[in-house]
Amino acid sequence: MSSINHLVRSNILRLTPYSSARSEYKGWAEIFLDANENPYDTGYNRYPDPLQWKLKERISVLKGVAPENIFLGNGSDEAIDLLIRIFCEPGVDHIITLPPTYGMYKVSADIANVPVKEVLLDKDFQPDVAAILSAADGHSKLLFLCSPNNPTANSFKLDKVQELLAGFPGIVVVDEAYIDFSGQPSCINLLAEFPNLVVMQTFSKAWGMAGIRLGMAFASEEITGLFNKVKPPYNINQLTQEVALEALENQQQQEEWVQQILGQRVVLTQYLSGLDYVQRIYPSDANFLLVRVKDPKSVYDFLVSNGIIVRDRSRVALCEGCLRITIGTPEENEQLFRALLEFE
Ligand SMILES: *Cc1c(COP(=O)(O)O)cnc(C)c1O
Image 1 (cartoon, helix red, strand yellow):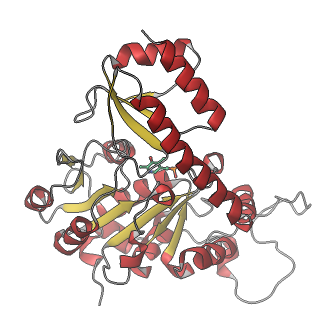
Image 2: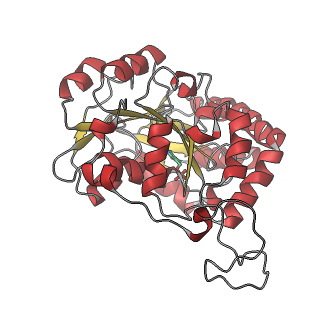
């Protein structure tokens, strides 16, 4: 008995997915004349594994999630786009987001002509559970929770996430792009309890692999099955699969980077708190700081003129006056601080 089929667009339930040449044969073979590939070995003349089993098995060990419960996308951005196309009937269904948050949820929905209901975070940047649940109805197919949240840098309280998982009528997507920098446990631990949960993580931040475009989604087999049905057959290219496997062999490097960045987060916080035009540094569970300054536009322009680019979030609701600053290397943070000392 499916617990989520009633949430899926009917055309997707009926869809006959593309069947790739390599997924049709069963058993052993050594001569492949089925996919119109060039037979001469370049290292890349064959189509890649459409389901990336080798990579998923490695990620499975790392995350404690079975390979069947993993979907890999061309960045988390592909997972966001596919979720909207799987669950939301354009012009009929909607998604719910909690601004201020990551911009791609709304952009993907806008492209698909799927309306977005926005329920602002509260003044502590936490989800307003009662307001979200009262905004939700039978057409609320997806709720995007970004925790730690971009750009506010905080994590959502676990009891609020659990209340939303229990009470929201649709799929709850927890975007954990910054989870490796957080003191909070991953919502991966809740997958067994909530069939309507999708947890997204990425190689773009802690793993230092934004350039290979690889995002992960963890969910029930029902949901990963839908992802696999709808995704482009070869969405993760061979180069990405190989480079990701190499990166995963060096988990210690990733851990060292995370420790270094967490240390620099403290250092940068100390630097900034000594500047009189810095009004507030929000607590961060991520690899960036949200900082309220007296005249954000001038600080931003001054940094640009010094060859340093930060993100101006000062016109975003609840982030008035704020810049978002990514934690760099110790040298970069030092240069940022020296530039900021010269401001005014
Ligand atoms: C950076 C970021 C991502 C990463 O997206 P990719 O497509 O995997 O690079 C996802 N979600 C949030 C909130 C982010 O800030």
